[in-house]
Length: 131
Image 1 (cartoon, rainbow, N blue to C red):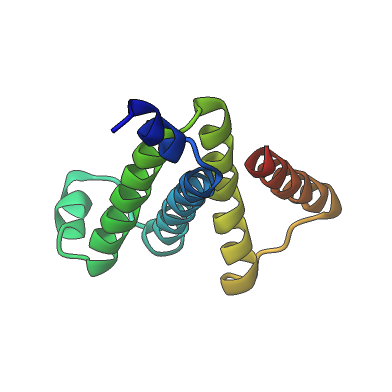
Image 2 (cartoon, rainbow, N blue to C red):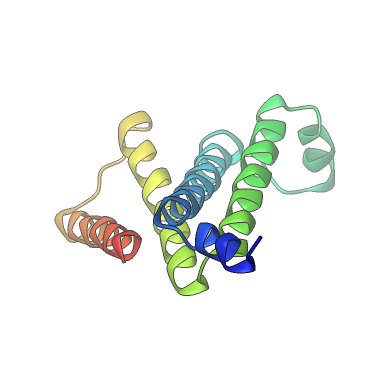
């Protein structure tokens, strides 16, 4: 077998889309972890006793699972992709998800300037993904 066949398969468009999807999912999972951390654990003081009690909080374990899953998906996307594409896609969704969840679930409001910024982030992520 020719070694070029494998390099062609690895660089195919289908795998590129999958790699971008891994970056998107990584950002979504890290964004979910950020949202849960703020929504559920935001009011807990950071002293030693609270940190010990947090080990028994199921939401803290869920945050850990979401964060670790997002990190591993991000690493997988980086393994096969360009940092200049994967990183902004992942970070864009890491920003978008907590904002949208806070608006829909916590009733937070964002002003017109922040709306424009959020739209610019979304457009930038999709333009990078399109490449």
